[in-house]
Length: 340
Image (cartoon, rainbow, N blue to C red; front, side):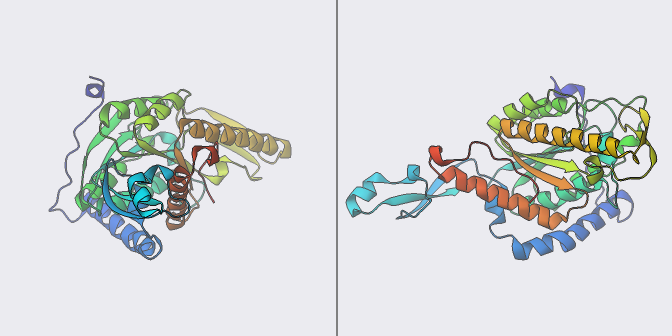
């Protein structure tokens, strides 16, 4: 019932037209495959195991207990017979889906350098989708804010294959969110996207929430509820200028979502210090909220190298797997992912 208010059908991209949007999307994916995925192939070991967690387990083998093995996997019958601790080795069910919840609201069109946050989002989603789908898994997506409204704009049902990655990239690049007049655009309500995802994504999946998290309050609880059912990764987009202002004299700053403008004097050292202090407070509150929700967090800046960022993500996932293997009393109370 909820989906009927915002869901629109996503047509497949024309397969027989080499030019236009489809040609640009194909060129973008080829560039990502050559510049990022090819680099990762030589560095990313066990990427399939690390990127996604299976929904089921099958007994594959028995072996002697080793340091850091999960004691819950000890086979006590075999241990008693052989007088040596042995553990069960499981293989995970790999046939699962990854969903991308993409915040394309107006604030994502910001970038102080060569790239905007939207471009970083598109590249990250394209690379992860290709890495995941080439192992036979399915990918789906929900796009929010690309039309300037508060509802989910498009739902891409989970499917596999390279063509599905092209569909995803084409949807992301179908036009800037700022195309809607600013006086008609509203503030981002990320909670709407998260609640819609809870109704849409029924089967346990890996869910990537890609957003700058510049949103009205209230998204923390829906994110936590989503994380209780799915394996959720928060990919936080940011730009260095959002954390610290340089001395550029008088500047007119405009809110991309509401259109509100304010004149500030960045030459004023006190103003820059207050701005940095408020930004640091918001950073701490945001990371604390993500930590309470129980999700892995990857911070992705407009100045980051995408391959290195994905390697940080893989290291984060590996640490999480290692923590799960520790007894409950030895696990860290709070773990926040982010830039290395």
